[in-house]
Image (tube, rainbow, N blue to C red; front, top):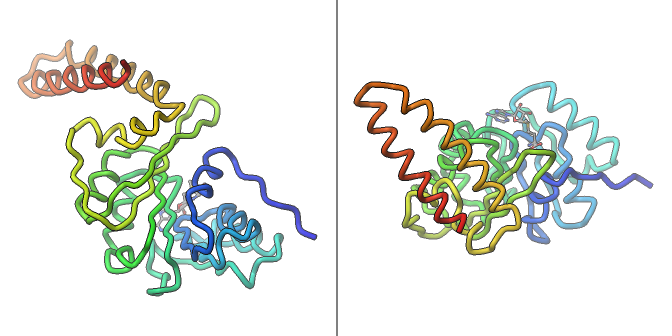
Length: 231
Ligand SMILES: C[S@@+](CC[C@H](N)C(=O)[O-])C[C@H]1O[C@@H](n2cnc3c(N)ncnc32)[C@H](O)[C@@H]1O
C-alpha cells in the first residue's frame, strides 16, 4: 500500500480547483506532487507531468514510481505544452513560476490551450500579466483564491473559455473574484500591496524627471484604489 502524498497549502489549493473526472496536464511539474495527489484521490483519471528540465523530470519520474502510478501519470520532458497531444487533457495546470513566463508558455501553444476546459494558473509574481493574457485570449476567470505559507501569499486563478472584460484597471492586480468571494486572505494581500506602493511612491518622490512624476501620479492613483478596496 502506497502512502498518500501530502500537499502544501499552495499545492492543495491548486488541486482543489480540479474537477472530478479530469485529465490533467501539469506543465512545469517539478516534483509531480499535484498529479500524484489527483490520481491518488481519484479526482483525475489520467495526468501528464511535464517539465522543460531533465532534473525535475527525473524527480517527477522517481516520485510517480514511488507512488506506483506509472500507468496513470505520463512524465515527459518538453518545453511548455510541446509534448501535450490534442485531446489527451482537458485541464491545464501551470504553477509555481512567474506570470510573464506563464504567458509565454500559453502563447506558444494557443491552439492546444484553447482545447482545454479549464486552466488553473498559479503565478508567483506578475498576476496582472496573466489576467491580461486570459482576457485577451477569450478566457474568463471563473474563480480565484489565495493561500498562504509563512509570510507569503499565493494566487490561484481558474479560467474557462468565455468572454470577459475586466472593467477596472485595479482588477488586473487584485482579481475581482477575490473581492466577490471575500477571500479570507484578501485584506492581507491588500495590506502587502499598500505597503509596497508606499515604498515605490517614497522612491519616486525623490526623483526629478517627467517620467518619475507621471509614474508617481499612477502609483498614487493605484494606492487610492487599494485603500478603497481595503475599506
Ligand atoms: C518552481 S517549479 C514549480 C513546480 C510546481 N509546478 C509547483 O508549483 O510547485 C517551476 C518548474 O517549471 C519548470 N519550467 C520552467 N520553464 C518551463 C517551460 N518553458 N516548460 C516547462 N516547464 C518549465 C522548471 O523546470 C521548474 O521545474
